[in-house]
Amino acid sequence: MKSHTHYLWFNTKKRQEIIDITDDVAVQVEASGVDDGMVLVSAMHITASVFVNDHEHGLWHDILEWLEGTIAPWDPDRYRHNETGEDNAAAHLRSLTVGHEVIVPITGGALDLGPWQRIFYGEWDGCRKKRVIVKVMGG
Image (cartoon, rainbow, N blue to C red; front, side, top):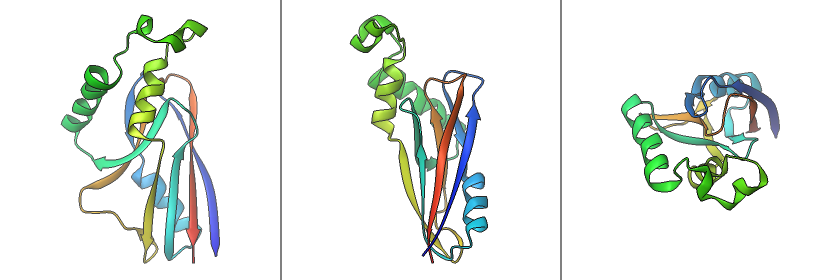
């Protein structure tokens, strides 16, 4: 079995952003030489997420509104975690809700995604250096 590891680095301009990383992951699948297997894509920070969904800016807006309005409003006084001097408890809850990693199949040396599926990095507490691990495994 082959394996290939690569790190994607981000330093977002906003505290919250959604970034399409599908093409970056596909480059690593190709570099790995794996024809049949899987790729693990995982945020290496507890205030970020990796998820699969549609690349549509209206949906991105809806996701951010859903997180703010329903899941974890950005209201520092609301959370006990913020009593430690932090102000990012909402980002931790958002990461927990959306998830921090995905596994995507590789078939014929390429990502085997559905017609509208893309891989995204969700940053919930940005403006500092963050990374994602891309681990390709297979034969």
